[in-house]
Amino acid sequence: MTSICIRRFCHHSSGIKNVTIFGGGLMGSGIAQVAAQSGFNVLLVDQQKEILDKSHKRILQSVEKMAKKQDKVEPKEFVESVISRISTKQFNTANDSSFDMKHETDLVIEAIVENMEAKHKLFEILDAESPENTIFATNTSSLPVGEIFQHVKRSDKVGGLHYFNPVPMMKLLEVVKADTTSDDTFHKLCSFGSEMNKTVVKCKDTAGFIVNRLLVPYLAEAVLMLERGDAEMKDIDTAMKLGAGYPMGPFELLDYVGLDTTEAILQGWCDKYPDTFKVPETVRKLVAEGKLGRKSGEGFYNYSK
Ligand code: CAA
Ligand code: NAD
Image 1 (cartoon, rainbow, N blue to C red):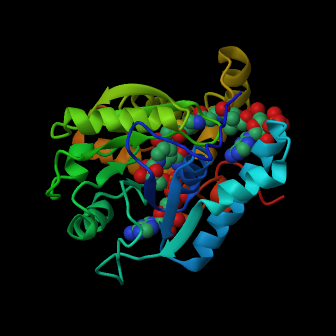
Image 2 (image 1 turned 30 degrees about the horizontal axis):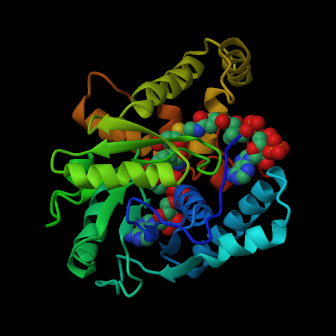
């Protein structure tokens, strides 16, 4: 069971107190929740109020589940204390050319769309506006961490914090050291991960780090297997759950991760290593139709009911 602790008077040895998270989607809202549960003050930033309202609802539901599950003596107080640590702000790199870092930020965690240009644009703005000591981290699934930060001046104060979906349930955190990441920054990021009650593994800045380098080709192969007509979708899912002990089958997991995110990961790798990776046509087709998985109500499976 994932353990959660609410620290009222916390001292974090990482020296991090205030965290700003960009992107309030699947990952950003989960990271915000777990950071708040671990005693950090969180500012969650996304493009529109409607998205932030959705993030807030998702966080509230998840914290309530957590409170129930952990048999909290005062579940209401627990939920309120977590929610009170999270504030939100609207910001859109398409319209806003500056971001007021009034909320003193020790650490920025970026969890916006998996697109290099969007990430560059965001960090260009943040580099100019953030206090000198603020550390920049990215939750990218597949892009080179060093390349995301190639234009920032604080090149020693950058790194990867790669969380797993659903963040409140998954125990692992991959901490990625880019070529320019200083030992001090890396140490702080690892300490921060432990303070969020995650088990930290250290990774080099290689394609997919550890988990996705193994997991994503497996997911793609499942789709190719379906396209070849080797087996039916439900049977492939059942086979991997009951024959390999995976908690979800590959199609259930693809829908859970988001097909747009999976397509972006594979496309990025195809561009770099065309002989090794392939984006299955079915993934492209579903994304083009707006069928992104659970988050849009349909992907390989339909969730509208
Ligand atoms: N918040 C709080 N509680 C949650 C939750 C959430 N977001 N999601 C599930 N839970 C709780 C449920 O309430 C339930 O609690 P009880 O046992 O008290 O009823 C418990 O977790 C189990 O949930 P479910 O019964 O609904 O389903 P499950 O047993 O299948 O567990 C799961 C859900 C943890 C998601 C599990 O299916 C699982 O581990 N799936 C695989 C997920 C995975 O592989 N993630 C990695 C994706 S790859 C990635 O993230 C990297 C990338 O870059 C793409
Ligand atoms: P998502 O689509 O659920 O959320 C992305 C959010 O970012 C959206 O709410 C969008 O409005 C917002 N956004 C986009 N551009 C922005 C900007 N310029 N400023 C502020 N907000 C912006 O995606 P997600 O699944 O949460 O993925 C986010 C990141 O996390 C990606 O880099 C992805 O590769 C990575 N990641 C995803 C998973 C997963 O399983 N989905 C797991 C680990 C890492």
